[in-house]
Image (cartoon, rainbow, N blue to C red; front, side, top):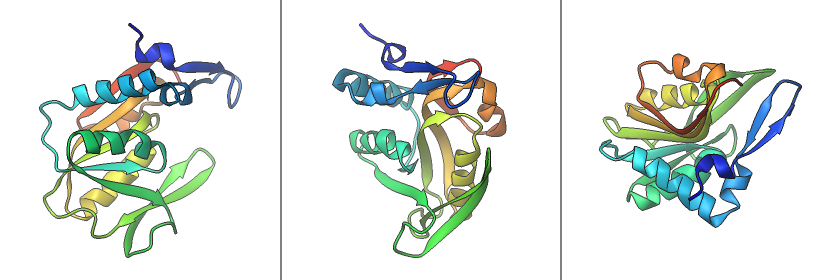
Length: 174
């Protein structure tokens, strides 16, 4: 039986020398790989009490939506600034070369809701930290962070210390 690691393609020196890029497109394009990824992420959520799933554009949608569907929960989209049609809250965060701003609808999280945040990858933790700030500003309680991959060398887990985190696959380095 294959593991998630068997479906992940590693591309050396992309986007720059010394980086081992972990390509998940090879996971989701294969029906068995996609099913295995969602099943493994869902298994890690057993026993966690949450009301709603929040996912960041776009890979957080890829993994968060099927988890929300399977577990009969609603799904909240976090998008790049300017893509949502109603009143939003926004949060800016640092990128390697500059900043980015993400938004979510202001009415998407109700005070007291228990929130699961899903993304494909935890690297530096910057995107998820921005999502956490928005969720908490709306009165939500982040109860778990769920990822398919973790790049340990970028210290995202340390940045998000104090939050419950799971990842299906963890790689040392960047």
